[in-house]
Length: 101
Image (cartoon, rainbow, N blue to C red; front, side, top):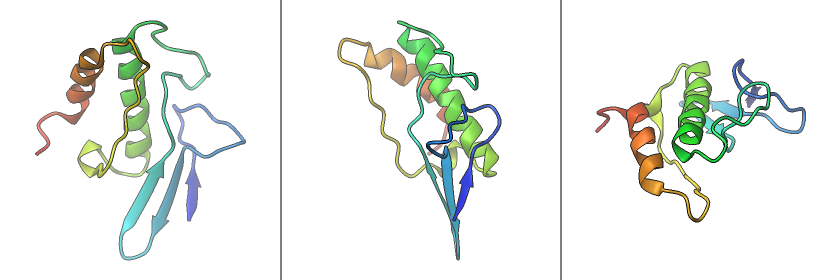
């Protein structure tokens, strides 16, 4: 088991951004991402599309640090605060997934 904290994501001694296990296959577990940049600054305060963009960028950084892309995702949970426009968040997230089938 390897703990990974790639450049571009906030570093915190209390948790690891990614846990990777390898055996016959590689499995990675990415911690919950939010709209923080590597300096811990909130990106897109009160703007769901900007926040989603940053969350997806953070996820991309995490995946790329393990040599993977969005096509490798098996399960993704997205939590949106009540009252926010889920459709805007969905539209932004789809740009990162592209034409994956």
